[in-house]
Amino acid sequence: MALAQAQSSGNCSSQCGVVDIQYPFGIEPGCSVDNWFAVDCNSSKPFLRSINLELLEISILTNTMRVNHPIYNSCQNESTSQFVNLDTTPFEFSSGSSNRFTGVSCSKLASISTNNSFISGCFSMCNENATNLGVNSSCQSGINCCQTTISSPLKNFNVSVEAPQSSIISNGGRQQDCNYAFLVDQNWFGNNLTNLQDLQRMTHVPVRLNWGIDSSSFNRSAALNNSTSFTSTSSCTSGSSIVQCKCFEHYQGNPYLLRGCQDIDECNLGYCPPFMICENYIGGYSCYPKKESKVFVIVFGTGRGLVGLILLIVGIWWLLNIIKRKKEIKLKEKYFEHNGGLLLQQQLISSDGSVDRNKLFNSKDLEKATDHFNVNRILGEGGQGTVYKGMLTDGRIVAVKKSKIVDEVGKVDEFINEVAILSQINHRNIVKLLGCCLETEVPLLVYEFIPNGTLFHYLHGQIEELSLT
Image (cartoon, rainbow, N blue to C red):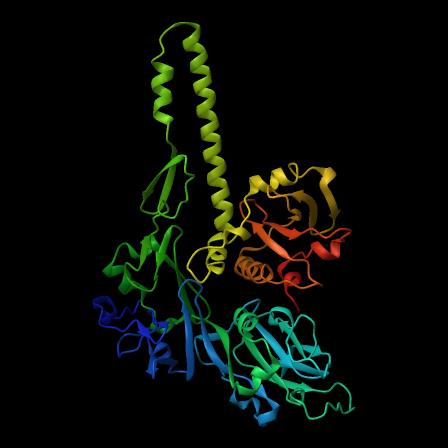
């Protein structure tokens, strides 16, 4: 890999304003993997030189970044030619739940296309007196604003906003006469844009891009010659023309640097229960019962006779239970990581740096709440799964959805992003998602309980059906 010498020696800036600049991106000459990732730091604002867009965030973990991208604004008579074309770059506009295509207009159809091919569109109803985008700014109501997802990443796109009929809609020259259409990072949109009038002052909105290193700039053999630990801590996959790397499980850091992936100390993160001893080692950890050694002393030091035999049997039974519990804990940890638990924890990190664990339920509590998923607790059953009525230890009545299918591995990130977004939504027409449990083979979703509720309320099914389109 073309690892910058300046990066290794610490001669490269790692900050521009509030943005962390991590390799393969770089500011000074020789600090980026190639010219695509060169960053200009102007007035404490980083700009990606190759596409001339302001860089807002870099994620090494997900191989994505956020940039400020132009929007279409009919009031300013701006054409779609200002949109950035990524055809020849190692970047692309993210799809799924990361970005949403958004139209802000009055009784008009907003559409998005690429290479003259229609991709998607949405229609917004007209309310001349409405200025808010709706609860949590997610365009749920469809009043003056609408949203839809895009199914696959894009290299370029155009937008249009037009009336489906020839009728002229008059609204007294109010701000709704201006039409807007844009791709936008959904997390930013839901938390930052609350009023239609805010768009008057905006020319750009944050958009999330996927990135990878151009294969011509990737020299893995050089990395292997310099460090035998490179392949033991990270892996890289090649697409048609780009390479993306990730740290192995139980490691974290920057997989694009030699020795960039470091062992995670799971013991400091509280991976073991408090009644067990945690032992961290390179590439993993183990949990041991605190009193395991004393049992052998008691059992085998008791002596002869019936009492000793009884204690031996009890000791063996106790140890078998410990082994069983350890296996259950390991299995739950495996399911938690496989179902995207670590990614969800990152999504739920609050402003003070702590994880909002109220949205993470454990399987034991949900089994108890539903009387071990008793058939008498079933609220309804459909093709996608079964919904059970349950009562949590704090007295809350909930609906627990147990799916019948396992989402594909490639959809885990999308599923976690949807859970993080939906758990923050509070709208009268949407059943509130309280959280989820990822310790089981199939994730369990926990909703607020709606009396006389129907399977339209709870059985969202796959990720596409979870999307607020």
